[in-house]
Image 1 (cartoon, one colour):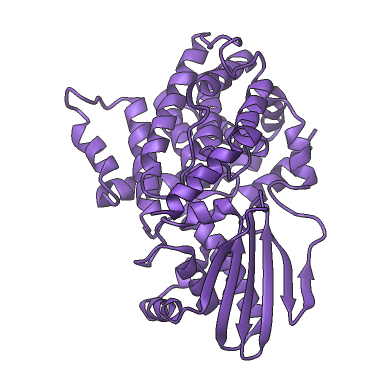
Image 2 (tube, rainbow, N blue to C red):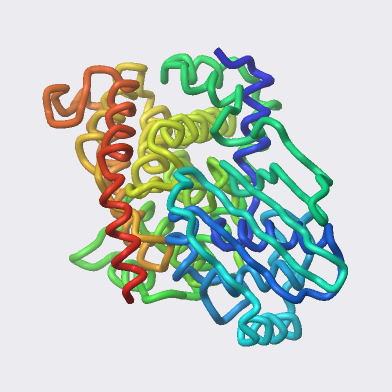
Length: 428
């Protein structure tokens, strides 16, 4: 079982600010690191990624840039060479650099390929310059650089992955816990220790509110807003949750310049976890301490579910993991006990299991609005002691077995589905 300090170590790794969709930023970071290490003028960049990094970075917007694609993300990293900025490196992008990025891509010196044998998050880049060759490898988590080389010599090498899966001892411990034990661990922390959780609420709420006003993307959040107060939509909690989640994700994945707080090292997951919990906290009048505990609980459950289904898979991890975690946080805020929290997880298991991931893009806003509505409904039913029957489909008696079943559906269950989804996307 995790200690309290180990819990905070996970938060430091997985709950952090990011600017832009984490998949293209991950590629930019790898190339930036290799370029910084070798120095000199860039002559060629070769990037190899696992299928789901490619899938999620193919069509999503890049903040401050008017093109999409991992080749552009790689070129940005090569020109910025600012790996110390990690997931906020895009804030250094200027119009002048953007033009140089396009010139690099037009010169056809950037190559991005897929390694189908890599089933976990993986980016390897080789940057050739007039001073030598730099290589960087990122594995398992978007900021987890495990190798940096210059001309074949190791500048940095990590023997064991440090964050978010794949041999991480902290997350291995988390994976062995029960949902009730996770709740107990969170409740052992004081308000002073958890107060930083509220920073994520302020950050993501500000993004949601601004995105509603700007109305970016294809108009999902705008249409929500136009219909609130009519016979179609009331200004109730579920509608507000859906609108805020839709607006923030729509704006972010359309390339908006929004820095958001992640969950399980992913930006959209951070929005899908934090906004439903924060909106519910306001509705029920929860104090700051209770809100911070609910959010910490939800973040850990999100990481826990991701460990079972995989952060990048054929299933929408935002819908499956983040929205289920949000349902847990909502249930907690509504006064739910351990049994009712398990009902919420079972209700989500029986509702949205199998929602596919077909890459990061503006349309994810509609998926996450739908999943967030399910999160609210599942929590509301759970606090009324309503849970779908354990005998239903892929559901189970315990919350833990429900989550394990989600994982089985994702892998190996949908492994072939994932390949077919990627093939469909590549044929466009």
